[in-house]
Image (cartoon, rainbow, N blue to C red; front, side):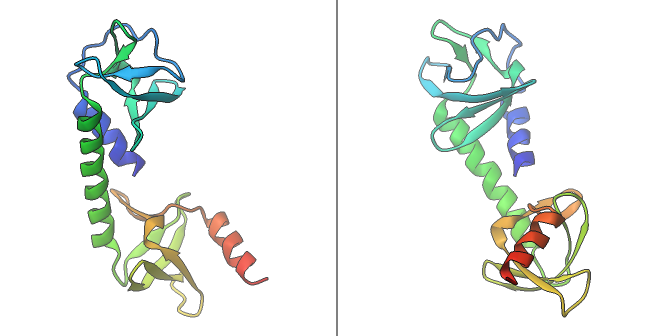
Length: 169
């Protein structure tokens, strides 16, 4: 869903003028166009800034921030930012749910082939590892993303192997 969040930042704030970004630092309060608080900056890493609205942690490019009287500003309110994130997350979940069907190939977060979906039972997704019906693993629906490259588990092959190994003990 990180990709969905990045898409939100590009769409929502693409018209933001590149103003001075002084004051964009961890712990700073971000303000909206009417001067109301939008959230607090929780990380700054390179050109990406994560603002916590209290509902979502939203990645925005550093260029999205201007400088107002009170501190860093963006061109949307907290409610608008949360609504855009809600829409992006709902769209990503719908895309994921549509891709979770028997026979669909699945990759791990590190790009390895995990196998194919054997069954979907509510939130439990049973995967035939490496196409082997006797070597199954069950992951939760929330552990998947439907990316442009295909259905991907949010876990690496090593993480899945460790979890399976721990269950066998």
